[in-house]
Amino acid sequence: MSGRTRLTAIFGDPVEHSLSPAMHNRAYATLGMDRAYVAFRVAPADLPAAVRAIPPLGILGVNLTVPHKEAAVALMDTLSAEAQLLGAINCVVNRDGRLHGDNTDARGLEQDLREAGLDLAGKRALIIGAGGAAASAILAVIRLGAEAIALCNRTLGRAQELARRFEHYVGDARRATRLEVAGLQALTIPATWASCALVINATSLGLGGDPFPPLAYEATPSDCCFYDLIYARAPTPFLAPALAMGRVARDGAGMLANQGALAFELFNGIAPPRGLMRATLMAALGRST
Image: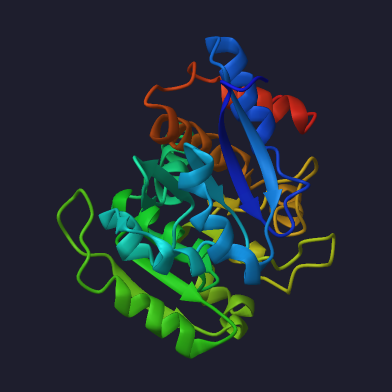
């Protein structure tokens, strides 16, 4: 690094565990760019000051992770249409001193599900959670053509509020996806699962190795795909029972790599080498896929 090195970054709390610096810096090195990506631990109370510092420090762009994605929306000069729909951002782009907020999470998830060969046309999906991650999951699933989505959350009112946000949204197929809401108790009822082609965990439940709440895994079709937005070296508590029953199971590593590549292009005006960020992430996790 030198006085001419331009910075990109990630703000989070905590952020020490983030593998985004490894992905972005590998891309910079491969492309021979005099840029660096660094991680800043930013407490929630310090977020406004940290965001205001982006233009004077000449930072090209910043990724946002927990707990800043929703709070940062009000700090932007402009927002993408997708960020407005989701009510959250994971990218801040410095456009000559004006800050533009975008969200690449839904696109990253959609791309990973397409790469997995998942066809949701006319099928039903189930999403657990009703926060910002669940909103991104809903958008991705609608774009994949799902006929219906069951949204299950501990607080029913929050699930209903999220469902209303997507009432008038139509995907690429130009038709609306039916949204249903239920409490977490529905996850133990076999009928909830009977026709699901995809089940997504969009919560932090099970994070840290704690057991996941009881689910009727055995009631799902044999080709049902289980997807955890959390990623780890080993199968998460949500995915482990699905794997034991022979179901398809994927975690959020592919989504992270995809959204990272999209963010890299937003920040730098050039795409990273194809597949490089994913390969870097998997190597850091000690995995091949």
